[in-house]
Length: 160
Ligand SMILES: Cc1cc2nc3c(=O)[nH]c(=O)nc-3n(C[C@H](O)[C@H](O)[C@H](O)COP(=O)(O)O)c2cc1C
Image 1 (cartoon, rainbow, N blue to C red):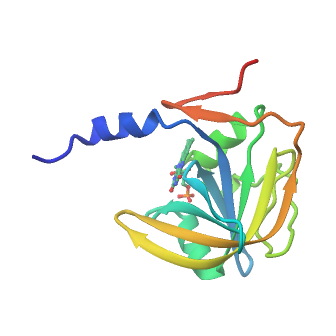
Image 2: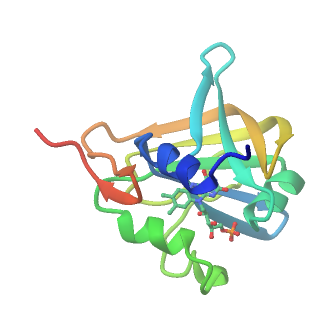
């Protein structure tokens, strides 16, 4: 019997995550989207992964540019998460955002809790997503900024 997709999504929603905006650059093109599928992979060498839907606009930019940055959002950045997840006005996502760059040229967003800049080590297609493994070239962290959380389709933060 085929798996119930809605039940599967409901289970995945119970897995509480942080929220990132993964950005990339290919030549003069920059793009980025909200991503919760971010995981540490290795400390030596320093390596992380992100999963990008094949149908996303971000995936081909990472594939062509071979770089990505992971911007880990702070508690007060839910609106930025929604902006980078919305399919409306996606070409305006960076408008009014005072982004910079670090090593690779992928956009580093301001006022986040932390950020990583990565060179793509490998890409593995799996179903409707591509898993991008990235070697970490640069990091920034603001330990005093509380992080944004996401669980069962809602934003939240740590209490206490
Ligand atoms: C909290 C949250 C987490 C998300 N996580 C992912 C993810 O891990 N991978 C992914 O491909 N899309 C994820 N999305 C959906 C994309 O952000 C959304 O489809 C976006 O519009 C894609 O933009 P693009 O097609 O311009 O690249 C997430 C959305 C939200 C709100």
